[in-house]
Each structure stands twice: as structure tokens, then as C-alpha cells.
Image (tube, rainbow, N blue to C red; front, top):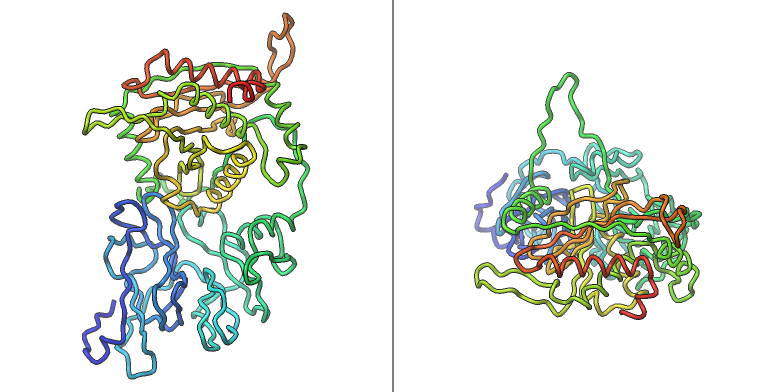
Length: 467
């Protein structure tokens, strides 16, 4: 990399350092650069995506100018506080220091259309300047279909744009563009409702043709993107670096497993009435526009059980030797993503109505699937639900999320023979497992919470009488 020592040029360049984008994080990996030397950038424009120990985060540049130098290539882990990019804030005022050639990046961002005069809404990947400028296409740019899912697993975004773009490119953020691509929606056909003509996620969903809904058989949760890691011919082993979210998961799980004494209890329950309630709610006008599934009822049942047994919603403070009772519930939902398992949570879920909870769950799932969950969304959880049923698994013994006292695992909902009103009948049945920290939750309390959840799912009218 080039080191700038010319004092006549030094005042022209501003450096942008890797910020702490989480809670005390010390490093982040550069996943993707959205700019290259010579590109014009504006205040607020996202210049790169980085992965921390908690999530993938987009970093905006805080000033205008022309990119002079990228200090680190994609795939590099950088300490917080290190300079990652230098920008010429007074281009054209003299000769700039030479820029060292950078390695070819793994991904090619789309070429940008000519920006109209006058400041436009700045969205990720646009970088609109005051004057009419055109983003420089990099050498060796390719056109073609989106990259395979295996690249996403490795944190590489290999989508290639077309060689030429129409003058009026629809305005939409990258997560919305990805959603449209996944749904097969042409953004040019979508009517925008966002401010300044920006297409929102709701606009894309509105443009999508509704798919026939299959009969619900299990609680829904974010499905993982599983793709094979490329293996060289004849290789007997493949080594994958442990970093980012995967590294944080490993450390947290080891810490939790060996610091909190886990106890897990199980109950098998007839959820036929819950499945009927889900079907009815899907037709309820008050639930229009939100996702209704068994996970919604299970989440509400757990919240009611916590309300009836508030002592379970607590944390163990080892340093002060105190049990910290929480008078709020930040409900975590374990989500499998290309970068590993993450647990974003719904803040103050105990205060939400059923339609509000449904909307929160839908937003949480969509954001997790797009890989855009923020560190703040994963901080401060109090109790978690993990849905192993989506993988066809009957149940499990989940490990506590660090700092929490309980986690509920939901198994697959299957049609099984069940004794109902004295006769063996086919019923929808599932198995629940509740793991809890035995330092602050004894067997009686844990059993009460699990029994309450089961009772509500068996007779969901108790949501009204108990909630």
C-alpha cells in the first residue's frame, strides 16, 4: 500500500478508520468494497461491507471526495481504529501521491448511471454527487448471472451488473434489490411508495404473485443457506478459517456450556387447536399484511408463561453475585444464516399485541435472511426460542444464549396417533424442550414455565384468559 508523505498533498487527504460498529468489538473483516481508487464518494455513501463478530455491517464515508487509496483488500481482518480508506477531498488542486495497485477484488459492483444535477437521495451503492459524474467501471468487469450460493457462504458477493443500464434506474437499497431478485421481480415494474421514489420491501412484496400456502405442519423460521465449500480434486481435507460470526458463536457457546449449569426438560403436546387457530388468523382482517405461522403462537405462549412466572426472566451476575430480574422481555429468535447462527431479539416483546408481534417476527426473519441484522438487534436478549422443527427434528437440548436464563426449543409438528377424548385419533403433535440455568431457575420453576407453554398450545384460548 502507498504511504503518503508529501506534505503538499497531505492536507488534501482524509482518512477513514475502522469504527467500532458493535459493543466493544475490536476487529472486523472487510467483506466487500463498493468503491475503487478514482471513484467519487459523497458524505453518507456506503463504501464497504464488513463482518464483525456479531453481524455484517455497511460503513458510510463521512465526507465528500475522490477515493485515493484502499488500505486493505477484501477478506482482510482489520483492527478497530486502523485506517481503511484515504479520500482526496480537494481533487484537481494538484498532483496526488501515486496510488499503489490493488489486488483485483472478488466482486464487481454494478456500474452506475449518470447522476442528475442537484443532490439526490443517497442510497447504498449510489453515491450521488452534486455534479454530473459517472462512476468508473473497473478493468475486467464481467456481465452475467448472479454468483452461486457458495460464494455467499464465504462472505463473497459475486453479483455482476449488466454492461449498460437504463437512464432511469429504480431507486432501492441492496437488501430490497436482493429480495426482488429472489422473488423474480423486475424493479422497473414496481411502483415505489418510499420517500423520493425509493422502492421499499413492502413494494416488492406487493408486486410479487402470492404463492399458494401449503397446510402448516411446523413452525417457520429462517432457513439456512447451505452450499458446498469448493473442494480441490483429490483433497482429503478442507480447512475453513474460524472468524467473524462463526468465531463468536463458538466462543459464546463454550462459555455458556461451561459456566451455566444447564438443565433441559421436555414435554410432548397436542397442538391441533393451535394449528386451527393459525389457519383462522390467516383469514382475520386484523392480521392482514403480516405473517401468521405456528411460531407466532408459540412466541406469544412463551410470553404469557413468562408473565405468569416472571422469575424465569433473569440473568446471573457472576461479578456481583446477584440474580438480575428483568421486568421486560427481549425475545430472541435463533436464525440460521449463511454466516452462522445468530439470535436477534424483539425488543419489549411483552408489550406487543399479536399483530405487532407478527410484524416484528416477519421483519426479524426478513432481515436475518438478507444478512443485514445489526449488532444492536442481537444485544440485550432475555429469553430465546430456537426452532429445530424446520429441519425435521423432533427436539433438542439447546444451549443457553449467554446472559440469558432460558431457551425454548420447538420440534417438528407432525401428524401422529394420539389419545383424544378416549379414542386414538390422528392429531398434530410436537415436542418442546426448555433449557434453563439451574443457578437461578430450579426444577419447579422451569417445569411451570414449560407446562404453561404446553397448556396454551393445547388450548390456545388460554391466551385470552391468561394473557
